[in-house]
Image (cartoon, rainbow, N blue to C red; front, side, top):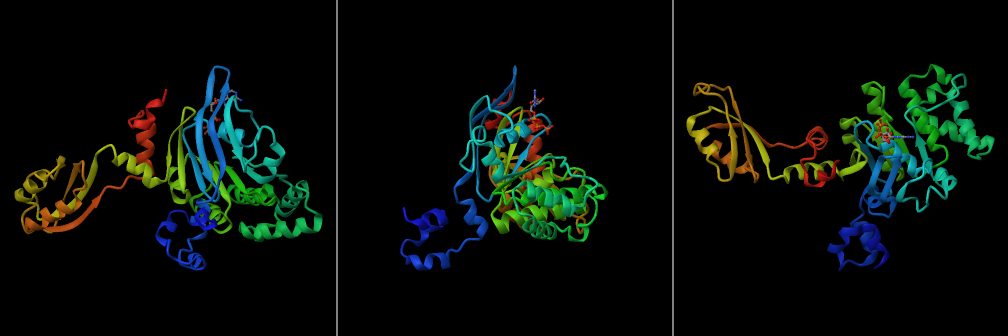
Length: 368
Ligand SMILES: Nc1ncnc2c1ncn2[C@@H]1O[C@H](COP(=O)(O)OP(=O)(O)OP(=O)(O)O)[C@@H](O)[C@H]1O
């Protein structure tokens, strides 16, 4: 394998005849794509943690790539924090293996600590000291010389948008400001991985948006690997490359939103929603009679009067995508098509399906 295969992964297939020197120019992927094709940075194999009789983390297999933003999602007590603690070497696994940056956190906890920044859900600061003082203190604790510590602290405060508050006592900070300072605090030792436990907890929507943007930028621009645990589906959906769904110590599914949604589709049912006018018996008959239709739900009769601009709506379910057939049926019946779309599953649907549906999917049949 030549050295380009490593970086360009699948793209290389199409480029066999291209001189090496041009490859980088032609298929230059975004930094982020490149990073995601690189080596794994966190690897867990059958990782298990028991507290007495209780299994907090149960045979977890999960690999996270360098530069990835990964969301650990799950209800209270699912095992997210225990998993994080094992990655940091703060609690010892009962079984299985975990490697972080190629290191064993149980045996090399200090090495791991140097390379991984951890922000717990409630970061502790010296409340009566300024933001700058707090950061400089962390820098000093990480062996950075005083002059350099000041420069780095100032730079980081600017990067997290707190330059205006550097002289303010942390006790007077809002929750959002504290979280930003928390991120600066983990970045000061220039980690390869940052782990954030519920970073957006208790922050107002605008603050959440800004904080997520900051986290995303860190990953996209600097290749930082980010692991964040959250209950907030919509937030996770915005910035994570992949999410892992935890239930009762087990990872019941992982992937990007599209692939999780596809697993829902793969259950064999695709829903198409449409609206059209005027609604007629002929249109209804055409839609309800489409090849492969499993269920048809249309407007109540009597339909809006012919000539009425008021559109009526229908929902079609099938094992195949009926979007184009349904569109044709509407037009052939002489009606106007107002809208048509294949229903896209969001993280909410996925979450409810996996967590509240009690394991309807094949992969989740191991929930106890
Ligand atoms: N030190 C401990 N001793 C005994 N049991 C524990 C300990 N820490 C965690 N547990 C149990 O292990 C399970 C997993 O807990 P964990 O804190 O990892 O879940 P979580 O997904 O992080 O939940 P949350 O979102 O509430 O933080 C829970 O049932 C919890 O009660």
